[in-house]
Length: 361
Figure 1 (cartoon, rainbow, N blue to C red):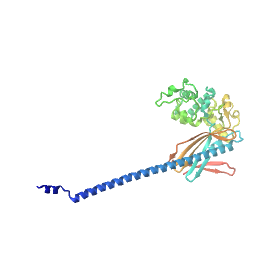
Figure 2: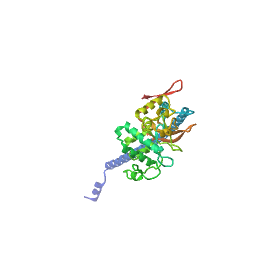
Figure 3: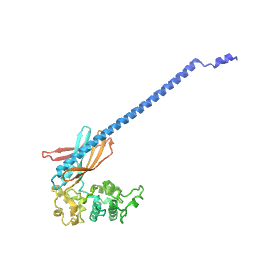
Figure 4: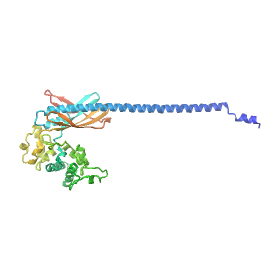
């Protein structure tokens, strides 16, 4: 074999070289298309996120405006109900609980306000000087007993009641010394998820869940009977005309379920102006200064829906004798894809009296 012939064999064929170049071009083109596709998808994804974020912020702002409008409506309604009147009655309170309903396209508001002085104020348990109010402590003990009698499945006995009562007092009082059945930091910091006692006023009833002895079941049973109202120079009174059956039972050792239900029925017909005329001999005489017939504190609750977004609202309203004002405001988390809700239909007669009826959609 000559060198010339060997060189001729080593030279690549023209067709094979063109095929390789074409394959490289195809692979390069595929890579370019893949990179472009990834970039396009990324841009579309971030654009979609920006649009959703913007829509959420706009819905949040709109929902806040609706919530503040609801506060304005509630405060105006309170002014009409309380201005120059000595009582706030049960029938008015029941109508106000679902008295707000606005629907405009995909935007809606449903809710109402309710009297908080028909409930037991947890902050009444301790005086402004930081000492337990023994009379209110006995009332709280009776309240838990009343709820236990209406819910025997909870299994609340005297021992459980004492633990809840004394632990609640310890939660509020400023010292770190636990009562015999109470609890302070040494108990709470030894829990699987440790925390400390507040040693201050309740700002929300939800804090009561953290108190020793309060199980989820007990909390759910007691929550409708409780309030966490601001503390002034004097204790807040119980509105006899709007108090629930367990709260009425807590006003004396001799008040039975039948007595309390009878008072509820009577107060629906005519507001009480002197408790001693309707409950003499049943209510503890020392509790009379803790009983009133009108209210200062109300809670506004509702749901604002903006398209597929939903916002829960809560406001604590105070009536100062001349006008209502907001003492506390709390908005829930804005949620997408709101669950099915019951719409409220509001009707007014010729005299301007409002009636609310649910309509299922």
